[in-house]
Length: 113
Image 1 (tube, rainbow, N blue to C red):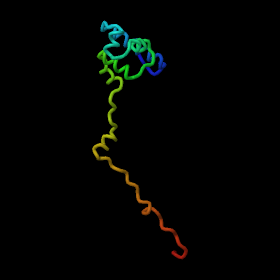
Image 2 (image 1 turned 135 degrees about the horizontal axis):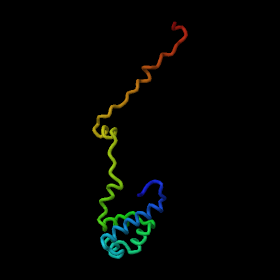
Image 3 (image 1 turned 180 degrees about the vertical axis):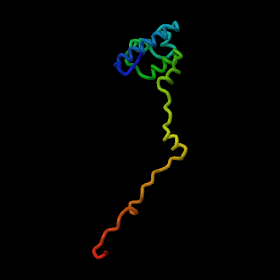
Image 4 (image 1 turned 90 degrees about the vertical axis):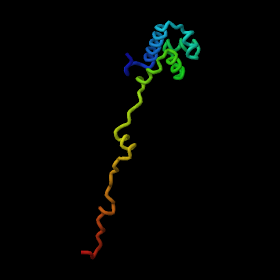
């Protein structure tokens, strides 16, 4: 299980292992996956070993393994907050502040007693 306590390297390693397992479950060689994904075999090797690769290469590999839909659970579309929803509907009430002039006491002047 991947969690926040894991190092970045450990997370990459776990992702690589999972990609390798998916590839093997589909009876694909690294060469076949590379050709299907449009990346080099060394990119597949680096991915499976947990090396740092470019994100677009990961997307290509996931697409070739029919796993691209899993990105939706990885990073789901965020819901708008209730305040944002109201703003989009144009129904947000604005706070009104009393006019400073109304609350300001008139200056006292000598002789106005």
